[in-house]
Image (cartoon, rainbow, N blue to C red):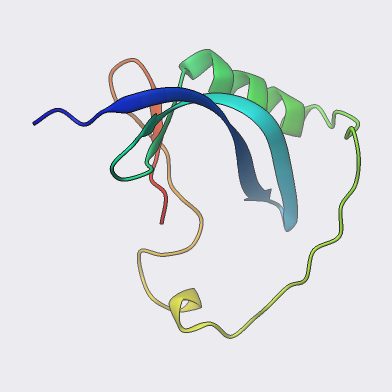
Length: 94
C-alpha cells in the first residue's frame, strides 16, 4: 500500500565540521506514517550553499548538549545519511 505523503515545511538540522546548523522553513515531502522526509534536489543544493558559503544566520540559539547516550556508540545511528531516491534526496528520521 502506498504511503501517504504531505508537503510541509520542516526544520532541518545537520552537523558539519563540529558545528550544528539549523535551517527553518525547509520544504519537504513527509510520510504521514513514518515521518521520513524527502527533499527536492534543488532544496538540498540550497541548504548546502547556505552552509558552505557561510551565510550569516538570521539568529543564534543556545542548546543543551547531552553525552553518553547508549545510541551514540550503536552502529547505524547518529546523523542521517541522505541518498538519492529518484527525484528527491531522502533523509531517514531516526
